Every structure is written in C-alpha cells, then in structure tokens.
Image (cartoon, rainbow, N blue to C red; front, side, top):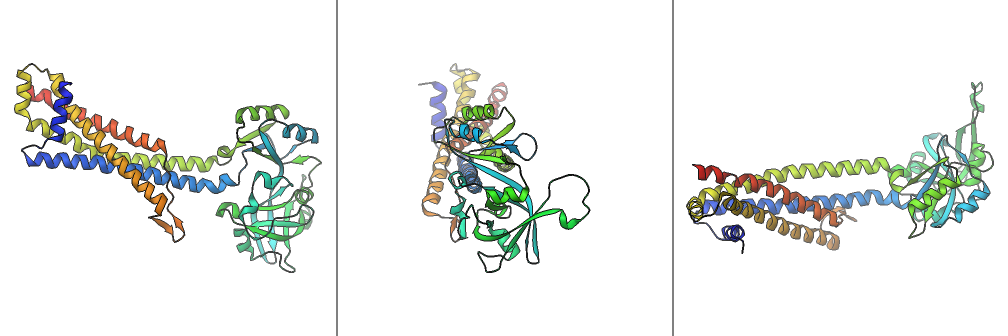
Length: 400
C-alpha cells in the first residue's frame, strides 16, 4: 500500500491524544458535509422552481414558430402549406395572426393586449383549451373570443353574459395624418365564450379569436399571416426540419424554438441560478478554511512523527502528500455523505411534500444528475486546494 495514503488514512480515522485537534477535525468534516448538503438542496430547489416557472409557458408554446424576418406579416400560400405539412418531422401546423389591440367593455379599457387569430388546427399544436376555467373554446364561424383571467377581472367581464359585448379596436392600416379620430380604428364586437388561466403574463396578454375574425379586423391580404406554429413528432430532427422550412420560404423567415421564444425568461432564470451557486460557493470556501486549518493543526500535532519519517528516509514530497491526502479524504468523504443526505431530503420532499408554499402547492424540487456533479466537483476542487495550501506548512517545519 502507498506509504502516504496509508499514513493519511490512519491520521484521519485515528483519534489524536490532543482533544483540540479532534474537535477541529470534526468541525472541518461537519463544514464539508453541511456545505455539500446545502448546495445540493439549494440547486435542486432552484431546478424545481425553474421547471415550475417554465412549465406553463412551455406547455402552451409550440415546438417551432415561423416568424417573418422583417415586418409583422408574410405571405403563406396554399402550396407552401401543403409542402410544409409533408416535411418529415412535422406533426401538425397552425396559421396564426397576432396584433396589439384595445379592448373595451362598457366604461373599462385594456389597451395593451393582443388578439391572436387561430385556425382550426391550433388546439392540436397548443392545448390552450385545457387551461379554460370557465366556458368553452371558440368556434371558427362565430364572433367569439376566449380571454385571459386577468383581462376578465380588469373588465369585470364574464362568460356569455346576456348583452355583454366585448369591443376590439385596432388602428386602421395606412399612412398619413388622421383627420377624424373616429375613423382611425377598425373595430369588431364579440362575445366572450371562454376564460383561460395559464399565468399572470399570458392571462393579461392574449385574446384568442377565430382566424377569419382577426383577418377581417386587421384588413389583411389573402394568405397574409403573422406566424406558423408547429408541433413536431417525437423523434423529429429539429435542425433538419428548420433547414427544410427555410428552403421552403427562401430564407425569408425566422424560426424559433421554445427556448428562443422565452429567451428573456431563460436568461433571467440562468442568471439567478448562477448567482445562487456563486453565493453558496463563497460560503463553502469560508467553511473549507477549516480543512486547511485542520491540516495545519495536524502537522503541528504530528511534529515528532514527521521528523521520524524524515529521518527514516521519507522525503518532503512524501510527507507533504500524507497531509494533503488527509485533507482530500476528509473533503471527499464529507462531500459524499453531504450529497447522500441532501438526496434523501430531496426525495422525501418529492414523495411526502414536507415543505409547502401554499396548502395545495408543495415547494418544487427536481433531482438532476448535473447538480450532483456540480456539487461534488466544487467541494472536491476547493477542498483539495485548501488541503494543498495547508500541507505546504511541512517544508517550513522541516526547515526550522
């Protein structure tokens, strides 16, 4: 057995005659254990929050969304639609029209919502109807709309109320100065047939309407649309589908996936995740000072043994390696036990909902292999660095 490893293991697991050394070593071990456990729990909790935050938007975003490279609209010919639906990997596609509108109900207005005209295929791409909390989904041949829960509250507007007409206004297309404000807007009257609830942002944003109603309101040309939303098959090659779509539209469109559609949200969550990791890493660095201190105290406690090893032929490198390995073993063992306990806590939270945000909503946590690797590598690298710094005391001791 390797000399340095054998002695390091003996020093780590054998009690010192000096009780202060034992206490310092125990504190160092607890620090490594607690640091690894806390970092893993925090990262798992943040992973759960991230998944929870994205679950709503991801559920109601398409796999791919085709948008115009310039302007708000582009032409989508019937021949292109047939070819698009034949592309391998595309399960179904839906035409969409989007534009900012003003909503009016009696004496109340909502000025910053969007009308979203959808065709008969839309529910096959996005199951928005599963988020309806009142009423039903719209019919294509009627002047009906489905509004968000936040819009409903702002307008004090319910579902299919007798005489409850929601008016939708949009500026008329064209150029030049408007001489008569009353003629500056197109408008349509509609009946609210359903109310959906996804999240606060989406509930306040979209008014779903039949494709033909939105097209008429915006005075769009034949085959002019805002976007195409696409649902891919399970094993579709994303890059290959993108290339074929670009060829079909002569590179005049931009294609975005779910991450690109929510890039600001992803960047915010990733930045928060990094900030949390760096904060807890700083705490772990402070805790791992104890490992370096424990190594220095062990060196001072074993001065007689060190000089004996040196007299018997062990060189400085071998003796230094003894204490370096002692600190490394302390770090790895403490880190592994911390990860095991952290994993148990995350598992118990997933199974038994130990911590609740609300009476019906448990705190979301997510077990990810990458979090284990991040914690283990962080603890190991910092612990080994602290052990190396502590073990350099050997040279000064032998030179004294």
